[in-house]
Amino acid sequence: MILLIVLIAIAFIVLSSTVFKIHPLAGLLIAALFVGISAGLPIDKLAETIGKGFGDLMTKIGLMVILGCVIGAILDKSGAAVKVADLIIDSFGKKYPTFAMSVIGALVGIPVFCDSGFIILSKLNKIVAQKSKVPLGTIAIGLSGGLFATHTLVPPTPGPLSAAGSLNISDSIGLVIIVGLVVSIPSLFLSTWFANKFAKELVLITDDEEITETPEYKKLPPAWLAFMPILLPIILISLASFAKILEFPEQITTWLSFIGSPLISFLLAIFLSYFLFPEKPAERLLECFKSGINHCGTTLVLVGAGGAFGAVLKETSLKQMMTDWLMNNQSSGLVFLLFAFLIAAFFKTAQGSTTSAMVLTSSLLAPILISVGFVKPFELTLLLMAIGSGAMVVSHANDAWFWVVSQFTGISQKDAFKTHTLLTGLQGVASFVMVCILYLIFN
View: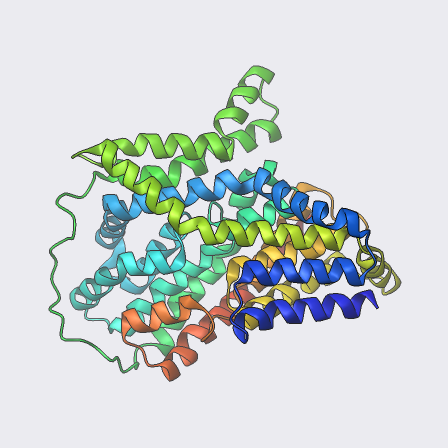
């Protein structure tokens, strides 16, 4: 009965946003109430459980999500994203323009939402296509694949941050970043190969906009400053993780753990970004805060609502039922990873949102982690990677990302299904295969 209740709740979550056009926040809260009442949880405690689930997840990752969105706004408004792109193109883009755009996408996709990153770099697509004599469709699909390769796997984008909070590995973000970068490598190369192989014959619906090399910014920042908001948090968080693993002296480990915590490292990157703005830096940085906070508002409420739904699930008998099923079928760790991948893929394909898919899947699985033997940070990180891989499968018409890529490139809906949608599915599978390889190597 509890399985039927949860399946009905999941179906309602999907249908509420896709068919009935109910806001996902309302859909998640209604589903949480339905599960709680139907499962016979104490009525007088149900509202408290929902509120606590929302608040607990916000406590873990709320500030990190906000600061990650602010960093994305800084990269956009300062021209740093364009500078990073220019440098990569100048380095090796003339010979390998599609791969260059995929690498640019992978870097920009770490702190910036896919749709924002693609919009920021869409004009660069046209310039690179013109310079390299490579079809615009090929360049655009290479960029979109690169952006998506890291979007679901490498913090500080909200999806992996949220899932880390649900799986109780917020303190191991450095490990998540390192493993996420490794897992994203096959997907990155796949996007280049796929774009060169299948996107070169795309017929684009183009406007007659004149391609110009004139940047939108008065002056692009120097290279070291442009890379700083992306690389500084990654370096500091990684140093903190290595300090613990390699057992540095206690005082050094303590300071590195403080400076390398996601919150402090993000703040340092943001405040050092003051120097990215040569004119009125305080005002421009304030604009970035406002833009970033506005952009992540919906993400935050969805993350919190997912936490509320997960908190109710933890109070039901679902945990014991899923544990018994996995134990009775003598499920291995690989089977559990596949289970997580398929659940995330179902949520992603059904309702479109990558972040929601990761939040819902991690919330659903969190109650049974100890029972199935996933307790070590590395195991939980691989589980997060399996969820992130599933949340790639697939981007289609119910996903805003699908429309951003098609509309800003001029790809027809039919061709977008053949290229963009197919590529996202292949990337999810490739990433999951890499997760399985890592699991077999280290377990």
